[in-house]
Image 1 (cartoon, rainbow, N blue to C red):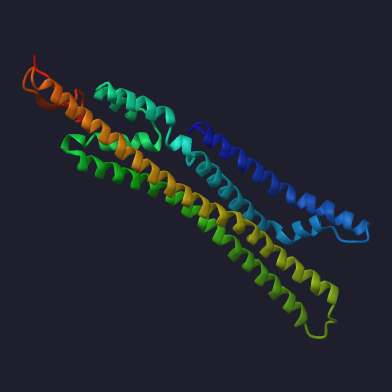
Image 2: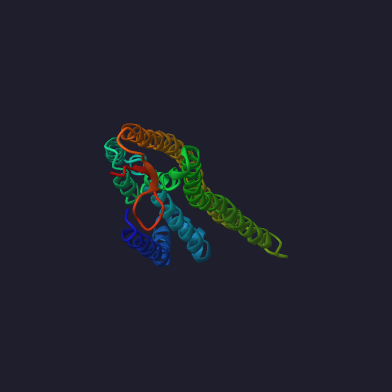
Length: 278
């Protein structure tokens, strides 16, 4: 998803969440009326009345944030997006033709994981292959840290769900025991069971948020590790190929004239190549 399309997607999710929150009282009222007309209680009406306005708004907000984060990470952590096959072929062909400046432009204009890592490594290739590798690995770690922050937000939301549900359960149990503690009042078992059931519904919703959150937290962490490792290995191969191609160019040009080492033309230092003085 593009940067322009992402705000629209989040705005759509927020509108859907607002519709759910505003529609909750009406749906609960309709379900209550239907319950009064029928012999048995409606689960949907009982569910909506148990959540209420306070916990309903909190759970809807958590759900919207969780869905938005999952969609963002799912789009960014696709393997063919992080490591585009077309980029690898185009870059390798350009390097084999010893067009080093064009190869740098190919990497710089590519927004993928591999493109960013290669750009960082090539910018330091003039100081040696080891220095270029270190720069590429550092860039890969930086990209991984950015994705880990989003994944941590998913983990936090999945952890908050059960805790908020527990708060609702404890609150409901307190109200139930306060009903039991009224002096001289006759205990209504049906009313007491209904109150406890309301309290447990809040916990169920919190667990329902936590389960997918925990799953996607582990899934995205494993996916990030795999992408970063594959990117580092492929970047190492491409940087090595580029470095040795520059050495071959020097060996071929040596009998003609003495080569001098300089950087590519541009506003900033790029990859070191051999310019043959004629």
